[in-house]
Length: 463
Length: 166
Image (cartoon, rainbow over all chains, first blue to last red; front, side, top):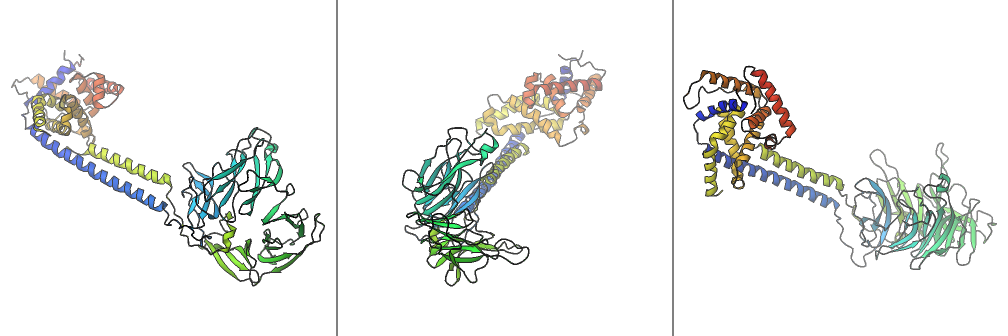
């Protein structure tokens, strides 16, 4: 009986007839060549990979670096002469103070899984853009820059005594107001205990150290009825002087619609559609009305006696609103009143010549100058531009202070209004860092391709 | 590589060439291919001989078996069947034996390279299923299925022979 082993051995015996052609020597020579080729391929592939890795890392590093030199002590402060759209991959302040800021820009901040609402601060001395890492800031809520650019007010998350209300942003309830000092990097926080969290309304900096804040409290938290979750009450105004322990009642009517606040004066709307200026020292009030064609809220000067606003009405069919947006400057003449009985208009108003197409009045720079926001729509590929102009209230002459190309509106959420009186500073365009996911993907791909290349070469190289 | 290692490599080849060539011949079915396969396997082992010097043969056989499969991937393995030498070196002439070899060689040529490698390692080199699997870098189950398929094919191709297994 033939076992398979014996049949195979019988066949294999035939190889015994083949004389040794010098297998050892030939195999050794081929082995040396084989080892050399493997080393050569491995070295070349590794070199190519290293060059690619260094190139990617260098390109990524270069695109993320600022070309701005640190500001010298005592460097002039000002708004940047041009505002750019910030990259979502800009660096954050990460605990280090950015110095006085000129602008805040709301921007989406990139993360590994998507984006989150963020705030970019623009340095008033260097023009550098940085995301502000505000501790425990409530995402998407208002952030306000003080007139001198040294304080940033923001709403922060905090604990609640009952179920939290997270419906607004889904990131925890608002439970505190905080002020970040841009010079020292310190944050002062005041927790406000509530059952379900705060419903923030607004911030207004009355001066560089005095913050007016308005908030209510939610009536329901997660798990309560929809009605309770979306309702809030006790919307009251508080005043917080930076450096004092806590906000105090501002002495304003509950639910007051505060439009502006200048030193010692607060401008509010009235139930009848007019406005009232309250002197916070004496309590005296002056009433006035600007008619029905105003498009932006009036802005008080430091005396509390003059306002500037944008108004106008187009007679062209199909055009509604306040086009063509002319600037009015007015002196409040309304009689003193505490009960709203004075008769409107209570204004001696004057339209500035040659000042159409203005979007908003940003503030009074001095007795004779106001700052306004304007925009120019582009055509085709030209997206137009937005600008901050300074306008002489006597002559209507204007000059450009800041420009922002490619934006139909100024991309500014808050501004250091004191800097409107200073010359703008030269600030280069902020860096546009690569998406770190792309950089990581490229680096990983190069490594993988290199590794596969080396392995493939070492396996396929012929011996 | 040191002189001592060179001698070791040469000593190994001189001592084990014949045995390795037998396996290589069964794997390839052609004496020229077998010699080339053996040289390639030895050449690939040469750069790491220093690490293999204690017990080189298992590694050499592993490279030999895997190389025999890899080198066949680039060509149509069924089209190649080397000529069967007429007689072994001892000069004995047995017409029946020659016919048996011829038919077995032709039948082996009908197997896939992996089936053939499994058959040779299991039933000529007498490796276990686990050792065969480790040598070829495949699972024990795959070794079993290849062995089963290879034997079934041989029984069809060689109906007159009893392929009893030891």
